[in-house]
Image 1: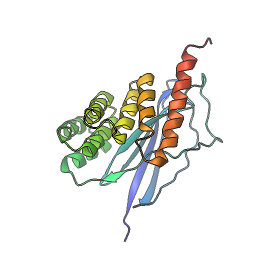
Image 2 (image 1 turned 180 degrees about the horizontal axis):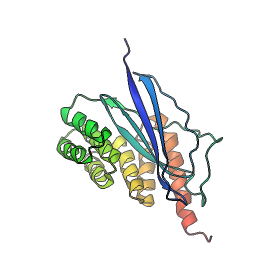
Image 3 (image 1 turned 60 degrees about the vertical axis):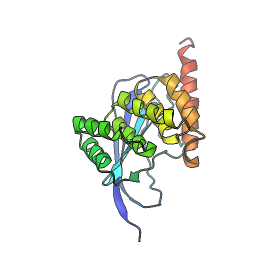
Length: 216
């Protein structure tokens, strides 16, 4: 018998191309185990977007992606469609420390979340560590998250979650060169249905780098 759980997806504009205004989209739905939840998000403009998925008894997941970021002016994505699926996959956990970190993060208790993530970071399991890094991203602790992902990659240079997470942490830090490198490396390491999104992100970041050196 399949169980269902409520899943909330936040879409936050982290860095617009030409404006400092921040926009947030909140989508809530019910997702079945082993099934694919789908939403339609309207009104995205060009920029760097943070996609967050949270729910009861699941590990939050965060992925940061550029959307038409190479455009010089904000451009609405309404009416356009992307040829890739959003690379978000939430997981359940029974680890008490990780559950405490996730609960603190989703409730906005940043200090408690950081403390719990620090405790989990001493664990040897790479997947558990990567989940802790995701929680750190959720509370916008990109330096902590990046350090955790780097710790994993030193042990396993082909860990897809850590490589993708390191790219997200770099984007939060506005380090586009590192982000492009990490996301490029992650393409062959993540599940096949996530590769198109990462490939599009790399292409967008490469175009952004070129645009920085072009005359206005």
